[in-house]
Amino acid sequence: MGREKRVQPAPHRVERDTEDEIVAWAEDEGGEALKLKIDGLRGFPDRTLLFAGALVLFVETKTPTNKTSPQQDRWIKRLRELGFVVEVARTLAEAKEALWLARAEQKLRWRKIIDDERRMVESRDF
Image 1 (cartoon, one colour):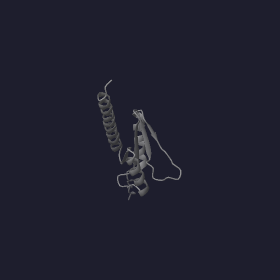
Image 2 (image 1 turned 45 degrees about the vertical axis):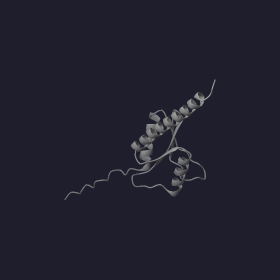
Image 3 (image 1 turned 90 degrees about the vertical axis):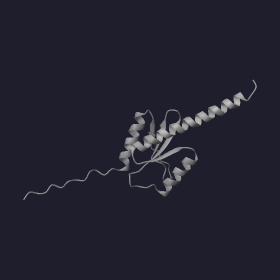
Image 4 (image 1 turned 180 degrees about the vertical axis):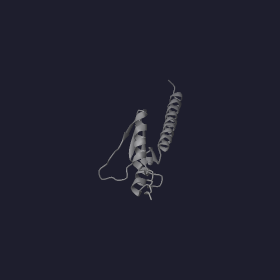
């Protein structure tokens, strides 16, 4: 009898795989994907993505089954309170969608600022 060939399971996807894809994509888009380590602080998002137009996106990468830690939840909440876009991304597609939403929100904020300035100028006699 011959030996049975053992089939190796497909490589298990880890957070690092998704993070690597996000970094490559951000750089392809002309952005920067920073990995910030803050001494004494745990739970800060895995990547800080910087894009043209002063657009900042924080990304915490997770596998489809992993959950964020309490420290990560606190950072996510605080950064969102400060007005930043923070995404817990399990796939590259989720990070791309977060950037699209961040760009849309930024356009709306700028439109409001411009409209407010226009109204202020129009209300004055020059």
